Length: 247
Image 1 (cartoon, rainbow, N blue to C red):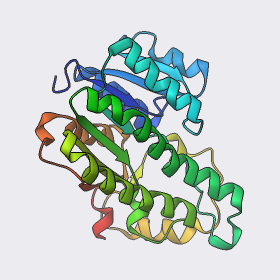
Image 2: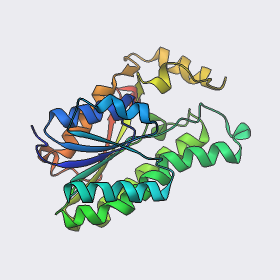
Image 3: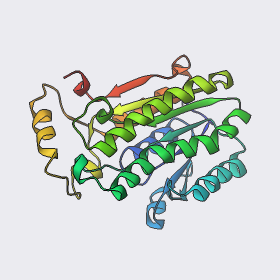
Image 4: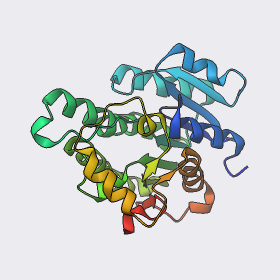
């Protein structure tokens, strides 16, 4: 119960890492207000009264403001944020990345966390501080993914460090987790990756480590960074990838 009675915003709780993180935080005693994109996804949480799903598009500023307003009205405080929701550029290379793909990926993976933190941090300051965890990617540490995804996740690391520095005086910590391959709906099927993914796949298959973790592995790291066990960790870049980033 490391997070007992604390209140968190977690984005993307419909599936994958976001869902696993919301479940983990609830078992640790927290209250979660999480974003979902569809009404049927909200039904996933009908039996879990510690998790409040809110229909919201993280790319819509009015939805973000409404999300923070729900937190303030229901709980009157905010102890942390986990920016988990994201999309992949499917390894489309530079010369085949149009403005639409670039804007969609950078908007969801970088601009949305920026806006969420900008809108929610004032409530965290009122609440006496807390912890923010942003979900980056192994791609931020290497150049073997598509340019839009790599740029967005590398940019998120820089944003994390900026927030960590600026708001430390308010007892707000901000850290970033870089997952490696993770067994989620995005990575395990249903999406047509570009042929440029093949060289990266070959590299991953040649690594002497297990290339894929589970969403729960990321959730566990989020819970640690949001707990008092990590009270002296701020601005950190944590690879949770089974060792991929050292290969």
